Image (cartoon, rainbow, N blue to C red; front, side):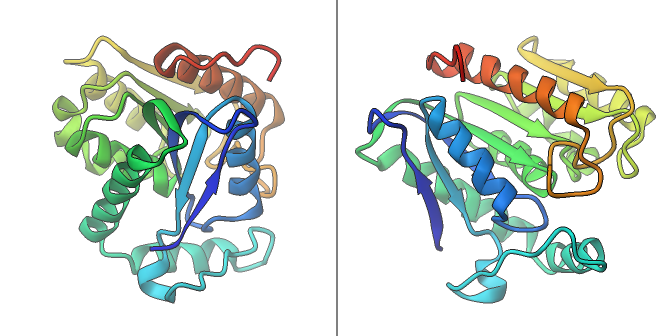
Length: 227
């Protein structure tokens, strides 16, 4: 499985597995990975479409007229259990790297937010950050198994995860874990963090990213002041 690796200027640090949106390891995902590396993390982003495309995976263009339909069809072609297992393998590989110095967290967006939740139910990451995890409403039976500190971001104008569903998710993920935070953003739609996508919400994106860095710093130990 091909994967992208970013390292901080120090050469080592705590780690994050970065799990992609339905558009793949796009320029946006690479920018987020680079920002995490700038904040002091070793970042590994596995190419989750590799079983569909082979080793040379091509990211999709979020601005194309049929981008969403194409990406959703591609994501639905994945075998869920195999993709989760691939993501678990990425987490284990990151832990084996000599650059790793500290704990390991998971950061996932959309498709990756749901996969990250499933991975956290199967393994023991030091923390989880999930942005509008599109599969989480169908995975709530796993909530008792997710014992890591977790941060979930949801827009309250999400076309795919409505406010009632967010309330249901909040109840499930906080029922047995008092280290879970669910942050919501008025006026923000799905994929509000992706500044290459038409749903980008600059205010919600900036607030969620600041909270993400603070959360990772609290649970992985890296200082993020000024980042």
